[in-house]
Length: 360
Ligand SMILES: NC(=O)c1ccc[n+]([C@@H]2O[C@H](COP(=O)([O-])OP(=O)(O)OC[C@H]3O[C@@H](n4cnc5c(N)ncnc54)[C@H](O)[C@@H]3O)[C@@H](O)[C@H]2O)c1
Ligand SMILES: O=C(O)C(=O)C[C@@H](O)[C@H](O)[C@H](O)COP(=O)(O)O
Ligand SMILES: [Zn+2]
Image 1 (cartoon, helix red, strand yellow):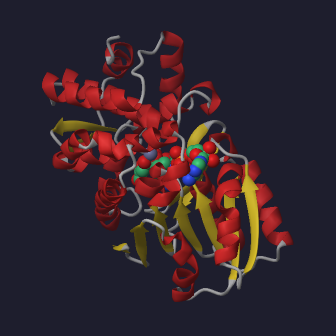
Image 2 (cartoon, rainbow, N blue to C red):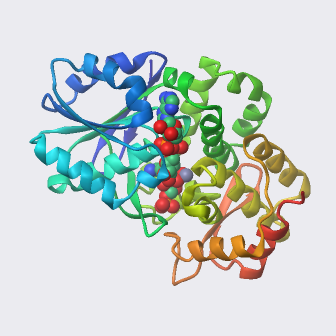
């Protein structure tokens, strides 16, 4: 089992990574200073596969649980309200620890509920998708969507620990696995070109779920995320680089009321369009842009958007949380494995990228 430490101003926690380590949840919880009262939040798919296991590992705990419907459409205040109700009925109090067992949707809403129930109770993350293992379970961004805008109501609220078992990925759909790769590619492009190349060279082994490769991907991704979050937990500066691909990506994700793209797919497309902006501004060359589009095309089908879709994407971008003085902020590549933060991006260039960023 590998361990990564996160050291923040007000808290420290361990991330455990390995194959078959879910069974250690009892000992890991025992090692934390928490009571034996837990409330598991999961979704129906993950619950069907793993809830019984979790209950048996925690058999000497007082355990209650709530299962949400799977998918982005559950990440809202109405579902949070249902969870609060069940927690009250279950007599959860400030000693209760929330266990988030699931993908990024479960983790974001469970963390949000934990951050607000009785003004905040402990929670731990047990991420079961690749995306949640490389990204959402670490760093403390917890939120729900509001009015079909992404992550509008939320908090910065760190987990007490994160348990990452790569064996969960054996039951994950191919589409969800590839969606998680969208965020993995992001890390290579923002901070580590060697890692990006390693991903390109090992792609076959990765999609065959080679355990060593998976642990490597998770460790490399989380080291990058951890280092950034340790400097800027509250997203006031450098943390914005973790949002590469998301300014446009969040707009793409919300098309058709979140029914068309998964988060990582939309981010992967956002990476292409935002890289196209860089190319237009002569910050990266054609060759690097092609390396990026080749990689993204393995994750999601490339797509040029029509005028109606572009209008919708631009509307969603108006509520991007990175905005400063009402101006959109873009994270753009400036070289191999390097990005910077820009506030003066011309609207016409953004529209051009959505129209022409992908030539089909
Ligand atoms: N907080 C953050 O820092 C952060 C970072 C990145 C993404 N996110 C958020 O994460 C969400 C996307 O997360 P996601 O891609 O994990 O989606 P998800 O949670 O919807 O999971 C995807 C699907 O996989 C199923 N599933 C989960 N684990 C499984 C397993 N082991 N076997 C079989 N099926 C399984 C789920 O039931 C669901 O249908 C978005 O809401 C996004 O905004 C948050
Ligand atoms: O941790 C971060 O910071 C990120 O930006 C990671 C993103 O992958 C993630 O999707 C995050 O939830 C987006 O945050 P938001 O502030 O743009 O809602
Ligand atoms: Zn993301």
